[in-house]
Image 1 (tube, rainbow, N blue to C red):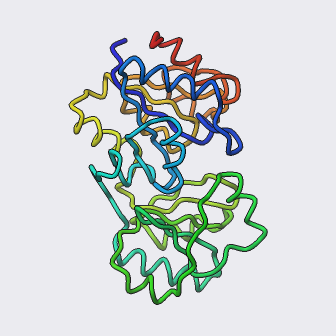
Image 2: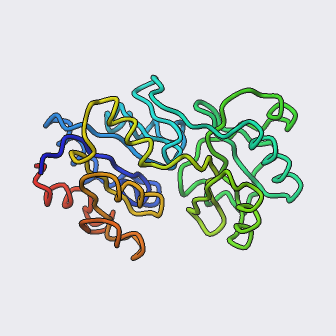
Image 3: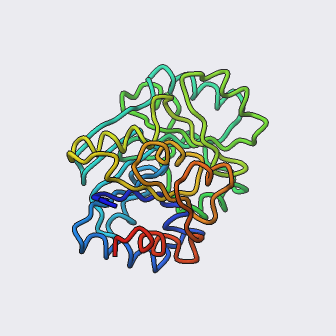
Length: 259
């Protein structure tokens, strides 16, 4: 296979329970030594990803499920939420007492402290501390907001989706979802990056484990599902490797003949 670029999801692919898998770290180092490009392709924010990028020496990132694409600190493509959507969302979250975080390129905001009962979720995913600001400040802000993390159970999904038809909902915990612009998808961000680099999607591979990886599986030339992925995710990938904590990335790359 003529693979020139590798996209890697983070949680459930490189990271298990907040910790980077050592064999995955070695695998990324081998790719970079061979001159194969690597990008992290994640639902996480930029702030939530930067430390891992520095550790892995990866300069490319597709964040917010494709909502923002960057090379180091250069923005290559972006698809933020409409300001009207952010305004309506703030009112909705407050009216229904739904805890939330809002993410810009460089900051994370909330208007009320996240309830203590939800702290284990934030700790499990190594969230950066959020800045608490008055709602009026956010309503008047012109900053681009790429994503809201909304802490809500599944019984809220239909109502939220009906209220915000211009948004997509990606559930990543029994009590937490990502809410972002409908035109955002990891595959759209990845295609923007490949176009920038002049690499055909047929020459790219993606490793992932979640529902937000399906678009990548359907778009990249080669797709690999982690062994810990749900069956409805695995069926969209061409190959399956072992689980994240069973050297899944390393063994998958070896199977593809990349080292």
